[in-house]
Image (tube, rainbow, N blue to C red):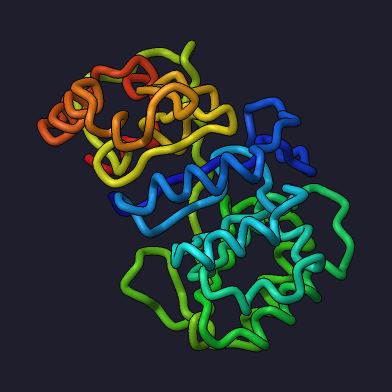
Length: 269
């Protein structure tokens, strides 16, 4: 497996217009996080700390980084960036391999200019961590995001990379442009029963309430294949149910009710 999404919280400090889910207020305990990371380690070395929610809100975030460091895991951290100033030593953690800042999250919101100052400081001091600035819905950026993008263009050369819609600003610093996508909903119309995506085959998600799901776009665990409250991660990924989904996705068969309604997977035809 290439990566596991571990949802340490479903709480968020923003109200993004593109997010269709209600904010939660749950935080996974430190004991569970440590236990789950140890269970995941034999199967995958790359961890994301979200499905829904803002991971930097977790009150034990620094301790979580230390657990990842101790277990020699690789962290790909996705954040809205509003709390980065609270973690000045973030880039020094050995576990951190990639920091993705979702700038589109602050669109149409009243954000302090210090937000961009913090990001600029990270760009300047960074040497080893891959930093990605994400701009979604490029045609409809608000004024402050347009201004910041223009300021980046004035300071850096945007070199085309092998990744589509991605540009390198300097060593280990990138800008990524993408269209907004719609989170799948279980009451959406069915769009088909054939196709595939990176879910199931390359990654799984673990929700804040310990359910193992096929997809990182499934915070309500409609695609749950087990619970770590009841069985080990090894047991769940060795189960006939999970193996069935693996074989189906390899054959481009989509049987999960949520997957049959997901428009995001159409990118992977």
